[in-house]
Length: 97
Length: 323
Image (cartoon, each protein chain N blue to C red):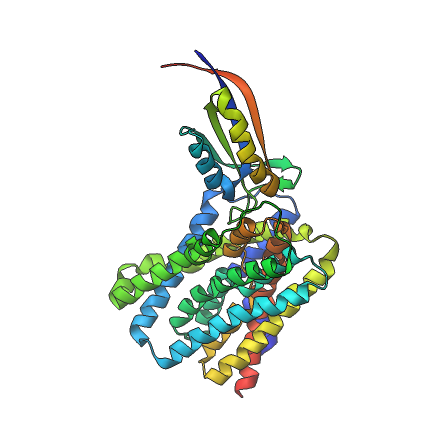
């Protein structure tokens, strides 16, 4: 097993494309996206019941090295500030296969 | 005549299903349409109406009258967001005013489709080019709305702004793309194409519309409580501005010499507000604006007003002017 950092981002569904591009720019090319996650945060209920993606959040899950974290966080911060959302970083291990 | 039209319209299955959806939310029923279905239903309706419009255009052809109608549609789509922006500034900040103005400058495809259903109940025909007019009226308001916000608002510090994604979203969003694409397929295949797709495009259309309006009712009722402190101003705006826009559209349509069905569709296009294409674009371009406001106004006030009262009232006004 190898030590790594787990990055969980919950953001506006309309911004997923931009966040993923940003991750790829930092060399993080593997990720999982869970669409239409619902919940409540500082900007109210995000219940995703509309025809547009306006009230929808999505979750992005990825793993990267500790050295990549500062750059990724600084790049994602303005998007979260402008559109809302959260970014959680935790220690993890992934199984080498 | 107006009373009987309103009653007849109110008692049509699609409208009653809309109220059933609203009632379900208000009594806290657990009725819900699983998430991918409303999107499928909306795509179906756009495909069907685009295709039908194309078949009509194949039959009637492009004339100077058609081009004048399309020009009038673009003029209204540009003017409405500009004047409504300044009306909205009385109570709203620049961002919300810009987003709501764009919403009212654009159109509601489902209101248009409900009007088509209303016309078919009365046996009144309409030109296929009105579907093209609908597609043309979706986008300009998005660009105008963003321009107004950038002209009168403060651009956030350090926020990079690019027109490219906004223009892409405005002109190539799923609704516009599918309507135009289906219209072209309808134009190419004509009556033979309509025959080939008949049960799908025609026979089940009203059933699908009813199902979709059931979901719209569920969502509209949920959004009713989102209007905040300016709710009475916004409710007044959401009813009076469509009436004003419809009145201007009917006069313009009379000047151009549109047919009865086309006049009603043009009035409905000018009176309706977008809750699909514009909110998505505005959320990207003007995140400072409150989506609860512009979605709630379009979906919970103007949409029900138009499909229940607006359509028969606009039709009655067209009848009076035509006498």
